[in-house]
Length: 221
Image 1: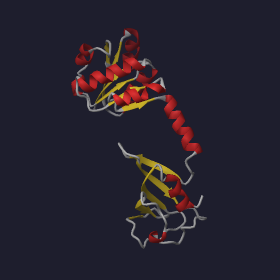
Image 2: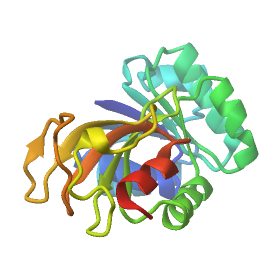
Image 3: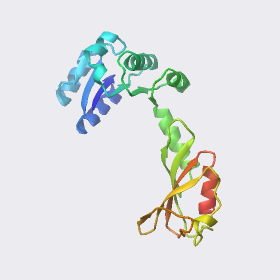
Image 4: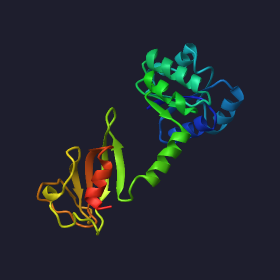
C-alpha cells in the first residue's frame, strides 16, 4: 500500500514510523526541511519538502497512485484542502484528516473527507464506552452509512435467558443473533432451538437505538 502523509509533526512522524514497520510505502510531506532531515536520518528517504495544499507538490509525490492520503498538520483548513485536492484531483480512494476543532467535523464530512480523527473525539468515545457501555457488551463494528452495528454480548450466570432457547428470547425486530460462541469457544450458527448457557457469547446485528434493550434482554441488567 502506498500512503501519502502531509504534516511531519509528532503525529505524522509516529504514523509514518508505524506504517513503515508494517511494510507499506510512505511519503511524508512537510514545508520544513530541517524536520524532514531529522526524520529521514532515522527512517530513510521518505520525505518531500513542499506544501501539501499545492497540486504541484502532490503531483510530485505521486499522489495519483496513493491508496491512502492522510493530512495531519495542526491546521484544520490545510488538512481539508489537502484532502480535497487528493480526492478530487488525484482520485485517491481514501482520505483521512486530523481535526483540531470539533465544530469543523460536519464540514469535513460534507466535503467528502472519508475519515476525521481527533484526540478529543477519541477520548470522548473512550469515556462513553466506560460510562454507557455495559460490561457484558462489546461493539465489534459499525456498518458504514447506517445506524446498524455488530455487537458481542456475553451471557452472565444471573441472566434470565440462561437455559432458554433462542426462539424464546424476546429481542426487538431490529436485533438478529448471527453467531453463537459457546463457553468452551465452540462456534455455532444459531438456530431457533439453540440453548443459551452462562458464559456463552452471542454476536448480534442490531442498531444503536436497540442496544440498551438488547443488553437488558440478554443479561438482565
